[in-house]
Structure formats: C-alpha cells, structure tokens
Image (cartoon, rainbow, N blue to C red; front, top):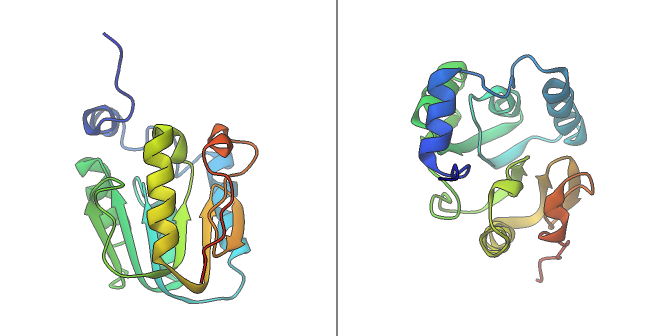
Length: 173
C-alpha cells in the first residue's frame, strides 16, 4: 500500500517521531532560505501576514517581527503545538491546525508566504489554492512561493517542480 505523503496522518507521524523531521531549525539550507525570505521583505512592516504550512514555527518566528498580525497554519497538531511554543512571546501571532484549501483564514493579507509546500498538492488543488490566495491579496501586497517574490502575484521558483502548476498570474483590478 503506498504512503499518502499529503495526509494529516503522514505529517503527524513524522512530527511525533522527530520534532524537527526536516531540520528546519538547524539545516543551513533552511536557515539560509529563511534569511533570504526575510531579506526580500526589505524594511517593510506588514499589516496581515499568512503562512500556510508553518511546521514548527521557525520561519513564523522570524516573520512575527515583520507583521502586525500573522496567521499561520499546519496540518500536524504536534507541529502546531511546537510552533505555538516557539512563538509564545509574540501576541500578534495566531497558529492553528489546518490545511489548504479548507483552512484559509478570513480577510485579506498584504503578505503571504507560501514556502516549499506546493509540491504536496495535486495540480488542480494547487491551482485552486493559488487562485484563492491571489483573491486575498490587497493592492501592493507581497507573496512568495519558495523564494520567488513579486507583488500581486504568486509564482514558483524554477528550482521547484511546482512551476508547471503555478504559472505567474497577475491579479486583475
């Protein structure tokens, strides 16, 4: 029987076996990626940010100082608990258990960080998520998919296989 690598059970099993299964808090690749994301934000402070797939909150913690209000979700209850512990000193951060596309928080955002989770979704679902996230961006907003940054668009870096699913699409209006 094949392993469902997008299921809640898959991720929960990973986090119960190892609190940092992808070494988000220690891998030089991950730490450099987080630094690049923060650097790309410049000096801007965002009103409302959203980070789906926050895992144990390593990037969430870095984003907390850049957002007046930051919403983060993860499918694993264990990861959510760890992220909440990591971000406990940030009253502007709300971390809940949830998965896209069902758990998109209400309201609009001027920052969406969609970082290295696109490859977990089937093409149609990823396109739905992209469209729903674009609809939530306010004018002048920033969004990311991996380290690709543009305003009022969601893109994927050419280094990830999700580029074939996430062709850049400007928001109209």
